Image 1 (cartoon, rainbow, N blue to C red):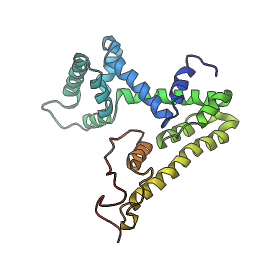
Image 2 (image 1 turned 60 degrees about the vertical axis):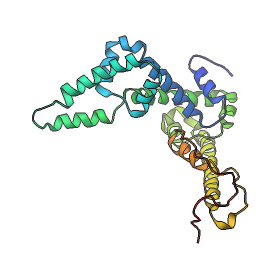
Image 3 (image 1 turned 135 degrees about the vertical axis):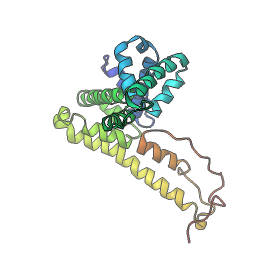
Image 4 (image 1 turned 90 degrees about the vertical axis):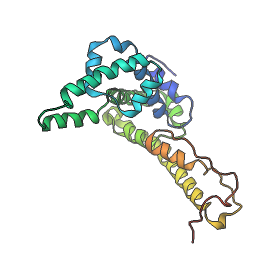
Length: 243
């Protein structure tokens, strides 16, 4: 498989064949951006201007805090809070609709989210190009466990023209990965629900014990902590909801 500075990150995230590769790509980009914002970007005035204006969502604030750079985060928050106080939420003054509108914009914005959106769209274009030109990558793509719902949409809506005559074939392959896993999840969830029927006493849970967590990850692109399910098979698990 041919590799260059653009294709290497794509190959890296597709190689594990575990879960959604586009989620791994997003996670990689987010980690790099959070490290950049709390690191070298601290000395770049143009970046600080944007972070002061846009702020960060809860997800990316968490990632920045996990970087362990307490002073960097404090400095970012200091100037961000100062700008909010001066421009959006002054301690006193006349009610201002424009100020409220600006506050609404900021509350729904995030410096890292904007960057990740742009970079993910660029990565999708690279995936498209590699899928068209490299048979080995096409095989690697086909061997993925699944594509989550969010990235199914992204892969099939970004730069459709770039896929050209390959659009239908790429759609078919991506739909097989997403649609096939969707059916698997639905069956596992249905089996999980059936295990609370008294008639399932003694039956095996099969692959359904973590079906709630896997379904949420498929629908949102984010992992959730698994709740333990007792090892007993269909007996005394929870209230029986089946009449």
